[in-house]
Image (tube, rainbow, N blue to C red; front, top):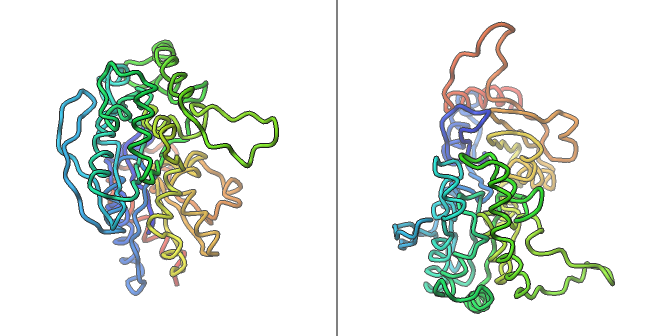
Length: 374
């Protein structure tokens, strides 16, 4: 069982369930239908909310307490996860809810400093590497707050100097950003444009926020010294950091940390490697994954990552979700052999009876077990 969390969204009125809970509900239903089957729970995450819970369930480790600022600058307790010489940090708790009623103020006035606070605490605790899970996030400050916290820099210190100092702090530590979003920071498909549609933010307000940050982003990019890419042909131009995939995660936290020396990678793929999903899949006869919505975007998230690992191991994988928008033809080459909605569509002219998420997961897992297990 290698599911993502399932949360309420536009097409999902069910309550939020963590990846750990989803795996438990699926296991319960499967065991009811096939009590002799051996089940392994392997909760997954793409780096968004629930990152630490999913990793702790698979890796174990110790939670380390730290005080870190919220988006408004108020210190509050939070934790990071220590596993050996590695630290795992979840940005979601320090960036605010992008769908909160005050989302407009959060995007324009909120700071990502708390993310830097936690990173700095982990580094000072002596870890050799840090894996930071970053999703959409409520703040949108191009990650400058996180850089200032890492550098211990006052507000009046220029961004170029902040970046240089933050880069020095990260120089001897491997930092990997597990990004849950594909969006770059800027551009028509960037995180700035994606602000439109959040509570209190329309397209004009989203564009205004991107324009406000344009100078800062350009300054950080001009101070950033990228390693030359051996993959680029002679005369080819390097893509600006702010236009690279995933750099919009956390309202630019991924962009800022990339400029300071971190590697930014697809979050679900990072977690698959960190938790050795390939080994777990290699011991299985079938893999069951789940997510909130199964569409093209899901193939960049947990269901897609699980499918790719299963395909490499030649193990069939099946996916479940409250909302399914993928056709069977679109599954070709993904490693997902079948996809199922959690509940069957109602008969014409009839409303579907309400079913809580736990029951829906358990019932569907039982039906999948009867189809896929002997």
